[in-house]
Image (cartoon, rainbow, N blue to C red; front, side):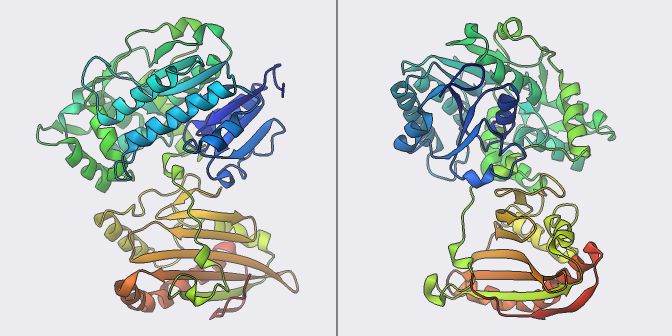
Amino acid sequence: MSTGKGMKSIFVAGATGYIGARLVPLLLDAGYHVRALARAPEKLRNRPWAKHSNLEIVKGDVLDQSSLQQALSQCSAAYYLVHSMNPDVGDFAATDRQAARNMADAAAAENLQQIVYLSGLGDEQGPLSHHLQSRTEVGSILRRGPVPVTILRAAMIIGSGSASFEILRYLVDRLPVMITPRWVDTPCQPIGVRNVLHYLVGCIEEPKTIGGTFDIGQPEVTNYRALMETYAEEAGLPRRWILPVPVLTPRLSSYWIHLVTPVPASIARPLAEGLSNPVVCQENRIVDLLPQELFDARKAIRLALDRIKQQQVETSWIDSGEINPAEWSVPGDPCWAGGSLYDDSRRIILDAPPEEIWPAVSSIGGETGYYYADWLWRLRGVLDRLGGGVGLSRGRRHPTEIYPGDAIDFWRVIDVQKPDHLLLTAEMKLPGEAVLSFRLKRVEGGRTELQQIARFLPRGLFGILYWYTVMPFHHYVFKGMLNGLAKASGKAVLRGPERFKPDSD
């Protein structure tokens, strides 16, 4: 299939990730035909560029050799932007090794001309953190195959929504005095996300990059203390006091990051371990091959803050979680489908069509809150965070825009059908599974029946006790939430809120 600039399709593995979901539209704008691989294609299908004529969204998994090879058919080049980073889910390094072997074998079988891999920066001759070691190992495995591999090695990527930048942002925003590990003075050479994307696109346009390994970073070497000070200046904050102490290990640092920032300890730990390694470019050949304006840390931070202020965060690390469909949550499922199933279903009739109610529904969470008793939601978030959960600190990527896979505080969007349906699954610590859905049904006279349905599948006796313990709060919170949604929409309430029994789908 020859398309776009006379080439076959460009394959992107990791298209739903932080970098991948920004790279795909740039490739489309450059005139390429793009095949985007996703385990959950629904995470891409509502994106503004999802209906582009040169885009194919395919379902597949790099751990599934057959689906990967099928997805690579008729492609000329591939981006490999896949990394595991959660040490709590098995051996992430072993998972990365298997995925890399599958990619190398599938690329060879389909006779690809080039693989572009975004790796981590670090001195390969010295001791590396487990995470950086794994990223280096993936590059080596890809190179064992016959397909030429271009490797870009980057340190911290500064951009709105990146995990590293969010750690920096929340630490500096929230703490006027910071007790930090010794790595605060470790040399590093970060790079702005726009510069990374320029290099990624350029690698398939410049033949001299094929088969090469390139270190990418801003021109100056800095350290994390200087980055914190620069962030405070750009954010208009008073000077922050930074006190490094030797007793804070990467593990202790990850727990501290978990409490202060939205980044959970499981992700913070490998990042914190990596921060102890000097990450400095050993060469800069790519500067001449793919020239561009390289932002220094100050400008990269300023651009990231501008994106956040303008509410234009394209992708965020919080949206990279899996979508786990809760089949048991569908109305009409028999009670034996997954055990005892409890629900709290309420509805309200509003004097307006669904299109005029939807903006209030799609804005729930984040800075908007939950329209009623937000102090209770905040308390639940604090308790969840202290218990090792995600809490409310993740917020949301955009105040009104919403896609499947997006995180909203301690919820994950499973399904969104504008302006009819929003389904959220709970990611807070619970003795069971929970979902919250909103349905907007048209009724006679141009009106809307707004249904709010909370369902809970308990785990054991403690789960059942939990449900009955929180039931009194549900009456208070959920009734108030419906009234709050009505008030936020500015539409008259014709009936309700009232309890009801949902119909089967």
